[in-house]
Length: 329
Ligand code: TXA
Ligand code: MG
Image (cartoon, rainbow, N blue to C red; front, top):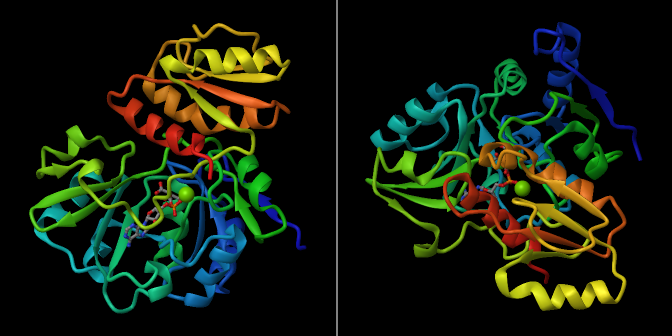
């Protein structure tokens, strides 16, 4: 097991020349590196090199059927790696750099390993200054899934990446806590309409200004969109209105329970409470969601209960993640 290095940007928020050189040298040598993004931390490797990308799959224990998102240095590269269209160009102009991933027909240089054999590639352009700095210096796109073990809670801080991948990768770049804290919105650009494959920080209402949007329930899922995902090791249940008696029974058995709180009104003797936002701000709740889940997971509890959030705006995205995190099997 090799030791994982950790480096940080300077006070200007960017990597110094030596650290940038070290990061790019590892990526050029085909080694994956964990990078901060505005959504969650990504485990990046040269998207044009199947051997480099294979190391992402093995570090994460990720099955090869789950394709990787490719990150571009700027919107200008969209047509270089995918067959673009006017709608994709308009979306890139509106939302890139930022938390929108577009699925489009791939060009030949994108390896089949990256797309899991699919004819389409998922492309994104991160707004994080360090991610931009690194991908621009590399001169090749970076394939980067979330930097967690497959199926587990996404990392929104460098310490989370180390908890997941320490000893499995050479380097983590510590860019502090991720702003959004939730993975990008994924849309398939299909002619003149959009299909949401994964909800995220860019809301359907925003996308509808550009084209008609088909909602997830209309669609087959994204290839990696499994029923169980983003899951803590501790059993998690959502406190829907009818869940009361089950949890009352558990408390009688003397179980140690934690609460992932929204309004914080759920009755019970909670060993630990993590409140997502004191001011009931959905953006703050998204920012804190995965780290709160991790805190509860690390507290030696028998079970975690999560209060349901309102399913408007970002609340719908958080609830989608919560349902998958609560799905066992
Ligand atoms: O915010 C994000 O998107 C983060 C940061 C690091 O960019 N990345 C991320 O990657 O969340 P990952 O691999 O954890 O989730 C990407 C999802 C997977 O469920 C995968 O199946 C789907 O995107 N995906 C990737 N390529 C695809 C493709 N060609 N067609 C459909 N879905 C695709
Ligand atoms: Mg992921």
